[in-house]
Image 1 (spheres, helix red, strand yellow):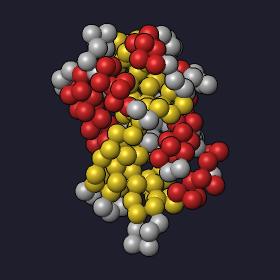
Image 2 (spheres, rainbow, N blue to C red):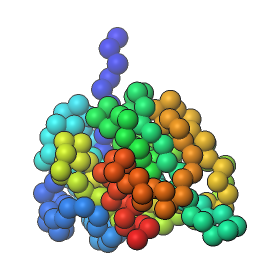
Image 3 (tube, rainbow, N blue to C red):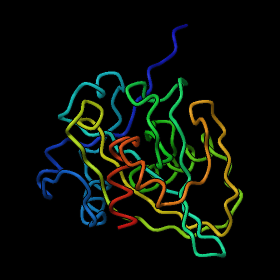
Image 4 (tube, rainbow, N blue to C red):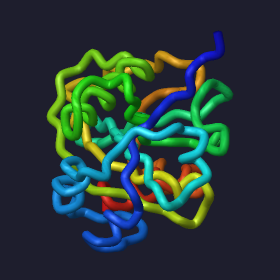
Length: 203
């Protein structure tokens, strides 16, 4: 019996445009998400078709994990995208964001499904053994490449009490905390979303 194709949570691009078209980083996440997550046009559609259809945007939680040590140095969890089951068009890029698609199997609707999907992705990708405080920082839309054209990133900042994070997947290679200053110096090695998030969160 063939495996059923994953259905992912999407919103028509026209809904986003009606709220206010933007490119890059948009700090007012709530203005968009309050309308997106309760929209009657929010739906689960086959992932294969959605990956090549810019008229829909796939909602992607993008969680940035940061920790400040006793000396006051702030570091961010970063990794290299490997050859596993993730977005193959991003392989070999460095990233500071943990997350992925919201699937039809994630419980609930709207905000509930979004939260459930984000937690599932975190549990799949990392082992997080620290308490933290969470803030939703903004949205990312980057139409400059074929991956960015079909995804809408929702940036969450987790401020950890301790740097107790390890990778759970081969697709997250070389995972560890890197000082913000080092990431700035090596910015060109990061995927575009990570560049945008780094600039916005650690200006």
